[in-house]
Length: 77
Image 1 (cartoon, rainbow, N blue to C red):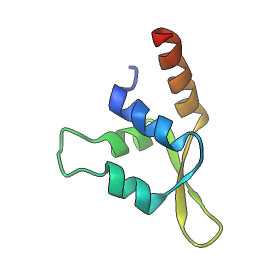
Image 2: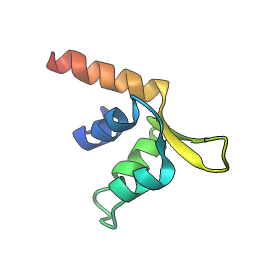
Image 3: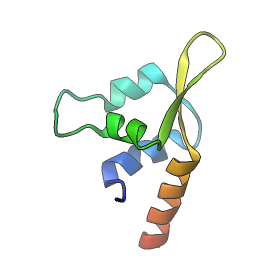
Image 4: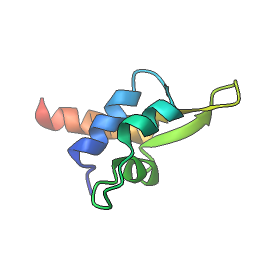
């Protein structure tokens, strides 16, 4: 199943450079059980949490996430 547009938006947002975990959660967390963009992207392996070297975490796009973006771009372009 292809990721939905909101999940791809999240992947595209973190793809250029890792974002601090707190910033990602602040922007993408929701209490709506039907809108689970962050959780779905993480579960699908499209984004990952990595240590930032300073005791915190950053969110990065994975190779699978970058590939999903490329496929979506190919379909549109």
